[in-house]
Amino acid sequence: MSSEPLNLYKLIILYILHRASLSLTQGVVLDVITTLGYTDYIQAQSSLGELIESGMVEEKNTYHRSYITLTETGDKTRLFFENRLSPDIRREIDEYLKNNHVKTLDETTLVSDYHLTNDGMYLATCSLRDGTHVLYEITLEVSSEEDAIRVCNSWEENSEVLYSQALKTLLN
Image (spheres, rainbow, N blue to C red):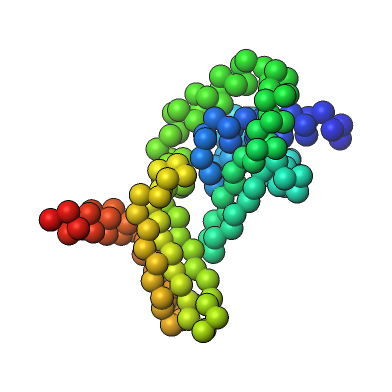
């Protein structure tokens, strides 16, 4: 396959990350590019992998999701080649991101992960973010990996209640 389509897919991914202006899950980025019919999942995944390898996109893995962010190098590259994206493609991406904003935010504002500490315990960290700004974060030390996973999974279901209770308690 010619490298020209792959370069276009990479440029589309860089544009998506630029317009979103926050970390997105790989699933969201791949959903945009495949739903709009620019390419199939395999080609999109390959293009994303090459962007990560080249340092234009940064990947951060949690225990259950991978988040990707546009790096400074990636943004400079996007800016330099952006005129190669047709106005129609840019408009379609902008509309998609606008129309699916809630779905995108749901997948990016709640972040949870855990890691093993030097003393054999597990730290589970759960945060509520608005873009790159942390609104609320809690870190709990637990004794087992199963408990850490349970904390992270519970965060997805209970974050709104925990955040509002903490805010109410602290402000009263």
